[in-house]
Length: 445
Image (cartoon, rainbow, N blue to C red; front, top):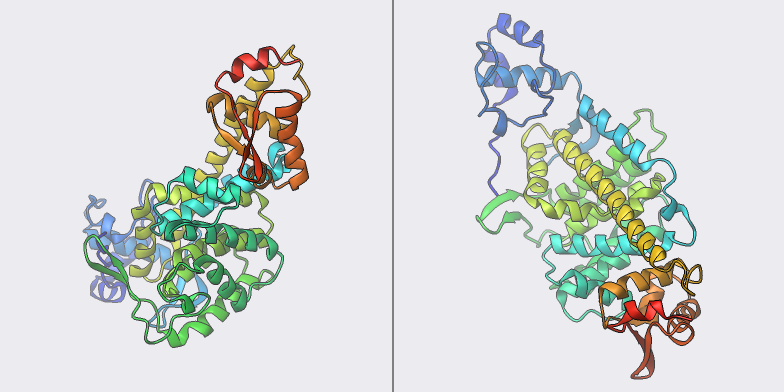
C-alpha cells in the first residue's frame, strides 16, 4: 500500500491566494463534497478535472473552506497535539438513517428466544474467524468452526488467535452494561492475545519505550504509521474511556459514530505490541452493545473489511494525512456496517428458505411437526452433507443449550426416528448422517 499524497498546506495556500478569489471559492456552490457527493481526499481529487477555471489547488481550497466550517472537534489529539475532528455531511446522515431503519424493528429469528442463541453463536464464530484472519490467521473457516463448536483446544498459532477472539467476544457480552475502563481494555487485549504473542508477558499490557512499534506495509516496505509515545498511553486510554462513557455530554455524538471513533483511536494509538486491530474492532462491538444496538451482536464487520482490506487501511491513512479528519474513516465504516447488516438479512432469508424446504419435504410424514428448529437444522445440513458427524458437545455449543438438551435432540434423531446413525467414538457417542438419508425420511414411522 502506498502512502496517500498529503494535501497542500491550507494556511500557506490560503495566504497566497488572492482575496477576491477566496471570496469566490467560499461562495461557490460546492460544500464539503464534490458534485457527486463524494468526500474526496487530495490524493484522489488532484487527478480530477477541476470545475470552471479553477486549478486543483483552488478546488481543494474551496472544499476545505466548507469542511472547516463544519468540523466537530474531538477530545483526542495527534502526536503533534492537533485535535481530531470530523464533519457530519449529508451522506453520513443518510447512512445513519439507513442503519437505524435496517437495524430497527422485529427480526423474528433474532428475537425469538428459541432461535436467538443459535444465530448469536454463529455470528460470534464468524467475527472471531474473520477478525483473526485479517491479522494473519490462516486456518480455514471450516476447521475453525469445528474447533469452536466442539470446544476443542487450539492446535497452532492461527487457531489460538481465533479461539482468543471468540473468548473476547463473549467477554464483551458479559461486560456490555459496564462503563468502559482501562482495565477492561487491558483484559480484552489479554483475552485476544493469550498464548499468541512472541512475548507472553505483553498480553494485557501496554507497549513500553523499548517496543519499537511501527505500522509497515510488508509487501512494499513502506512505513505507514508511527504511533504516539508509549509514555502517553495511560492518559490517552483514560481519555478514550471518558469519551466512551460520556453519553450525556453537552456535545451529542451519534452512538454509531462514537463506536467508529473508538475503533479508529485504538488503531491510531496502537497501545499494544500486537493485536491492536482485533482490539479496535472488539471495542467497536463493546461500544455498540453498551449503547443497546442489539443487532450488532449478529453481524460481522471483519468479514466485510476482509473483502477489501486495502480500503480499510486507506481510510486510516486519509484521516491521518488530512488534518486528522476522521470523516474518511467514518464514511468507510458506515458502508461496512450497512453491508454487514445486508449480509445478515440475506443469511436469514437463506436460512429461512432452507428450513421451509425441509418442512415441506416432511409434509405428510411421521416427522411433520415432531422436530424442533435445532433438529431441523441438523436435518437440513445432513441432507447436503452425507456421512457428516455430529457430537453432543458441538450441538450444545452451536445452539447455546444444556448438555442434556443437546443429548436429547440427537438421541431422538437416532434412537426414536432412526434417521441418524449412533456410533461409539472413544468414550462418547457420535451421530452420523447416512448417505441414504433422503430415502429414510420417506419411510420414517
